[in-house]
Image (cartoon, rainbow, N blue to C red; front, side, top):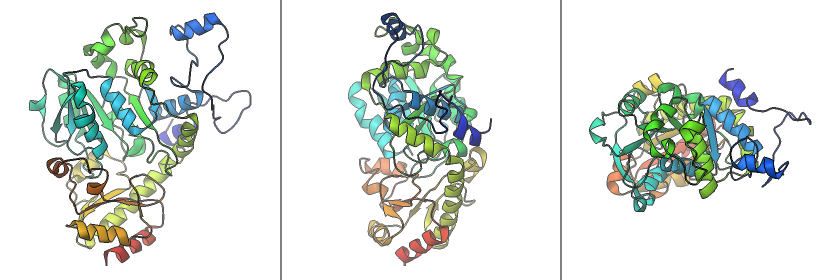
Length: 411
């Protein structure tokens, strides 16, 4: 089954009502057949619905569909992209462990790893996605996190180098595939262990729902033999050993331990909205990418330093050509100074000033003032975020209208 068909059909088994559209199971809880049946569900002796904090039939279809699109063995959908990243990290590390993070990551991810997790004893080191970083690895390194296409620098990761080093040391890799989407890049096919998404972006496609996703690769199970959370009994859950009990142990523990205890649960209604969006993702990402490239070329002609990976002049072009089918709808360009950036943003009419990406409506953001504001000067420089950098999330409007809007704002 091809991805376009998976996005529309996969994972939905019609009930007696035979509805073409997937039902919204807007419920908190489920009635058990008997005390014995309830006990078996809670003891993981049989599968079924327990409580929507752990699973929901509408959300289950979304999880299966996303996992299949990413060629994963299982998926977990949570309340936001940040909770997906948070769960992916803390499902692997404990106090004293280290995480290697790309220096081009989205600002919120950097803040999570460098500040929010710091009091819990989780350490971090930066690495460059194009430079050998083997010297940074220590016995405490438990995860390597990066983006397929970075936000907002638009750097494309060297998957072969990253996964080769990680595999040599049996370290788990986590790739945020939000910008490229499963139609633009296939990280698991490129050797990545875990894929995360902010499904609030291109997957929903119209800014109507917040959510996050974690997808586990089939090959991850072998690496998890080296991780204590998976190879030793879980005292909080009947002494189960996740590696022995589950085909997808990473997803199982994230659901049964982290989602149960931390509770970043997605609403069934949001899952339904995301299922509507995913059906048209293959068409939208193609159009977003086509228009974004036209705008990138226009901005180049205007004399700006432009970041868009499929431009032949872009420093990431060779990686984009190797790893991407589509680069997505994000374009960033540097106008040199803050006041000039401020004036351009102020003069735009069709591009709305919003801190979001992946919407059908075009968006403009000044990262240094918003999404990356918490970073210090050195971190901003590494992330490729200057005071004059403007990020565009190119929507589905007519490309000529968007270019004319930019012309008016610039001149």
